[in-house]
Image (cartoon, rainbow, N blue to C red; front, side, top):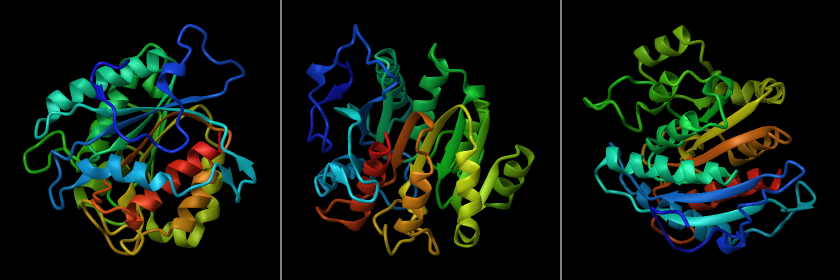
Length: 299
């Protein structure tokens, strides 16, 4: 159905894409999610391997039950896994062009893109497609960014588009607001840029000490929300297989509480990036799949 995709193992609980009713969108405001893997790690600067993230996350997703015990409900979200984007390894520009085209097709089907990376550079391409679509105004969208790093450099190793510059590029799109959670690594220039742009930043120690205040802030957000989730926001004890690990991170339990605070929110997109696992059963993939599972369980 989508021009630049190929079939692979599907995410657990996904329906057959042939069942999609394009002409008659679902009613009663129920969301339909389109999962798309983007096996691209062309801008990785430390540990490569994020190209294997989509596969390993999908494999890990089969460890979960449809019934979510914590939420006491069966997952009822309508999920369609369209497989992986046919990326051009080593070429961000061509890969981004294909990704934007594919996300535009997903949006035209009135579906919410759930993108599995891949390195963090892909988030810009997804949001650029959303920005260029007719359904959304970027200045209405709040970006929630879970990460160990600010990713606010203007250039990194001379490159404008990189996993280390992605939030600066997203800031260039002029979203309503950017809120960063779990940060514990940044340059002085990045911190200064965040301050000038009024980007709210909650360090990992802030989550430890004031998670209730952060949850309250999330619950007060009105309007569309896009979530960009770099798995290295977790401490390396829980996510060792990442592109750029950073100590003193969040715990899976803290992340679970934060994710549950998005219940009832208008989610217009979600990405999970930087899983660099090549082993079945790897804890990084399991925790990444759990976060996606929890977000889908909320719907």
